[in-house]
Length: 213
Image (cartoon, rainbow, N blue to C red; front, side, top):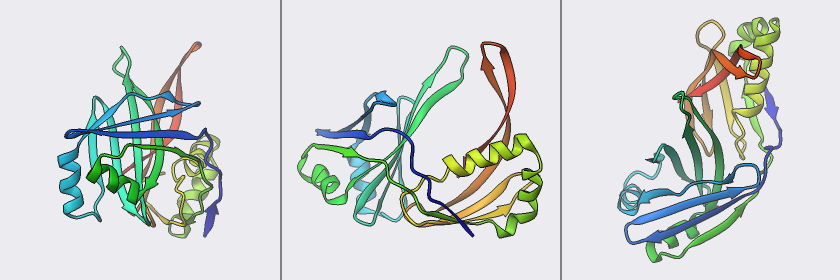
């Protein structure tokens, strides 16, 4: 068992939400990511989710941007994915994790009271149980490129602000299946990809891990 008490690198994120008739507009701004485009959410769809099974996450998308929303521990927790498509067809973007008090979110839904909140990055305390995958991890650590990719994935991909417990299980040659408990309960895969990075010196191979849920 080990923990990832790593600070979330990046700037504070300003979140603004405003209701206009049946639409809720969500915007964010940070020094690192700049001003992000407006994400529009149908209020009726969000209200139907609130009236139904709140234990399940709410998903939405608008103009290529994506939202995952959950209510947990008195907060409305949101994962935002702001994406842009390049001429080559490649997608690039940033992910932002923000939260607002649940009572402010419900007041916005009921009364239309706008939200303007500064979300500050916090230190996570995710704990990992990698014992089921010990043999696979030992093989990864013996390879410099795989070790770098695995270390970066463990540093960057589980930046949750609670005391979640993540268990890693072997799933293929150098990939993993995981399940997690906490404010973001989910299961999925931590998959090794052989990618290509375009640089001024040409295209270079790159190993990286990605989460699939």
